Each structure stands twice: as structure tokens, then as C-alpha cells.
Image (tube, rainbow, N blue to C red; front, side, top):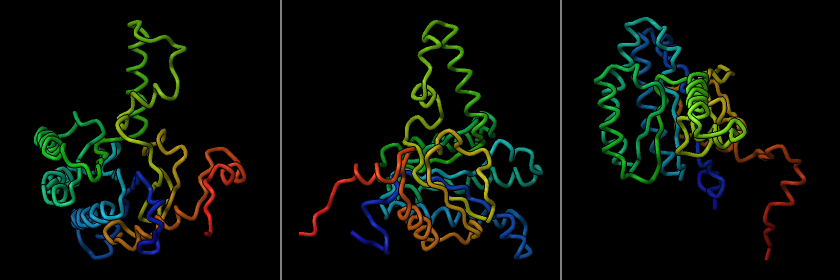
Length: 252
């Protein structure tokens, strides 16, 4: 089945996005960086609605990294305020979206923590899609925390060193409630991962575009998915092996 020139049978189950370019978008318009972040929230609304329409199960958005705490205090404060105002019911309840958050939440202001928890509780019964916000998050932090937890379990005799495998590590990651991303999108023209889901994107398809996040719209999302659908995901196998394992379709 085709929709918007997309194969609806091959829509990524999980899309992760590095939402980059808010500040540069605002600078082009001689506006403060906070103006760009506000425009970025509008893009989140657009893309969330479109992902639910397309049948995406998980949408993970890189919102604020642990490194972002080093930004000017005025910008950090503005971003925290924006988190509070952007967590509105409409974006979740209208689209039947469940809200989750990953990251070092304890570092956030208490009012932000309370709002995050309230939104998660309020949307817990929604089941069309799960939006995951990576907030005060970095992959190195996540892997360090997981390693520490596993080390404590070994020390306490709950597991043996030989029990440690990929599955166990994945179970100790913040993302243990969802599948790994099928498609990682980065906007804004930079071609790097920036400490985001390093373990989880081992076999994700990567898509980079020059569009600043506030300008990223439904057409841009469709283009990213078209690129994804044009690739063969081999997971270390040869192309021939993948083709042999795919079900054969009949022309009759």
C-alpha cells in the first residue's frame, strides 16, 4: 500500500531525531535563540501528529543533552521554561500519544520534574504512539549508569560476570521499554551523533539533512522515510542472504 509515495508496510517502527538548528534558525532572523527554540516546539507538534498518522510506534526526540548544561544560564533557564509550557495535553491527548522521558532527570528543576511526571501519568493509557523525550541525557552518561548498576549486581551476588551479555546491558539502559531506532534523523546540517543513543543505533539507518529543525515539516519527514525505505538493512549479512530470507510475492 502506498501513501504519500511511501510504502506503508515499511514505515520505521521507531524514529529518533536530533533536533538541531534552532539557534541558527533564529540568528538568520535576527531573533534571540529562545525564539528558535519556541519555533522548534511547533515543529515537534507537526512531526508528532504526522508520525502518528503514518503509524510510527516510537518517536524519540533529543531535547537537551547533559553537555547543554554548559550553555549560558539564561538559555538554560529559557529551555527549562519551554519544557514546562510545551508539555500541553493537546499534543498528546489529541493524537493518543503516550509520553515518556529518559535522562538524568534528577538534575532538572523540581517544577520541571513534577510536570514531566504528571504528563507521563496523564498519558499512560494512550497507545497510538509513544513519544520519548531525551532530557538531560547523554549516551555516555547512560552507559556509565548501566555499568555501575551491573557492577553492583555482580558485587551483591545477583549475577555472575559471565552472565553479562548484550541483552543484559540493554535491560539496564534507559530505553529498555522500547525497540532500538530503525531510523535516526539529524537536522541542521551537522553530520555527527553528538552522544545520542550510541548503543541503540548500532544498526539504525542514519539520515542527515541541512534543514533547520523549525523548518522540518511533513515533507521533510517523508523524504527521510523514503531514503530509509530505499536501503537494505543487512545486519552484517550479505545482500543475497537478505533477499533469500524475504518472502516471495506472486504476480498472480
